[in-house]
Image (cartoon, rainbow, N blue to C red; front, side):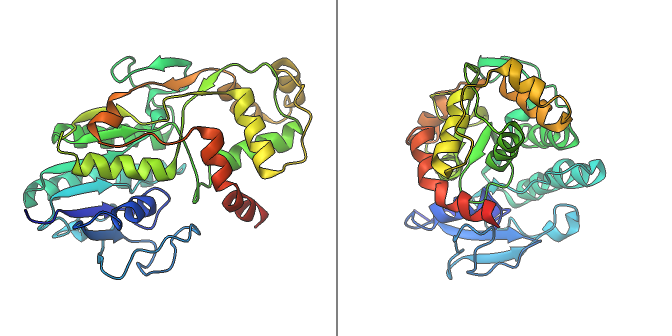
Length: 318
């Protein structure tokens, strides 16, 4: 059997670099790595300490420039698409996430690629609450340019018979949004939360990397939409308490309730918004992904976050 050849987009990014790390330890897999912002070298792309390896083929490609993608999928068996624009500029989001993904899918089809796997986001559902939500259980209602255009990217992949994985909160080396955002919220609260029983889905980025590669290689040939998070959701109070403890943050008062927290943040609209998101369920269920991607969900949030704590302390210290 010919060794599978896999193209990974966003190969030096937060999620893509972890897919690369997993793939480098799978015998026989041959990699082609695409990026356009960061030079592909053995140096880490996101401060994670992950190198791309000397035996990987590299290619430059810009999703905002469809012509640059020509030939990128030639000879490829599967595409793991991890490149997305996450930001407030709607024009860039449309060019990269929507039009760029469409161009990539068209290039994959032209080259006869058998499988396309795209990492999206549960934010395509909107703000919630979502309690044990399964794929197909709610209409998409994206509220930002990022989530709107990533929902468009999903449509291109699904129309081609591909696979979409939707994580909620992703943590681990390279995370510059999820946990740092929680730390910023804690900094404004100067306390943890008590009695916040809302449930939230999380996944560590190393497990997500295994799931994405598994979906590309699995003999079960998964297609359609999957939620990809650890099966056990975490309450809002547990989430913040774990972050405080693992990072050694000074805010040890965990007795503040949601009402008192809202009052404390009344003059800080962005922090109040994050608190309101934390106060309602964002729990996404789907046990199929682990079976179909031939992958284990790994340890729970407290265990995996503790393992990543030293990276966060270094990043937040900078």
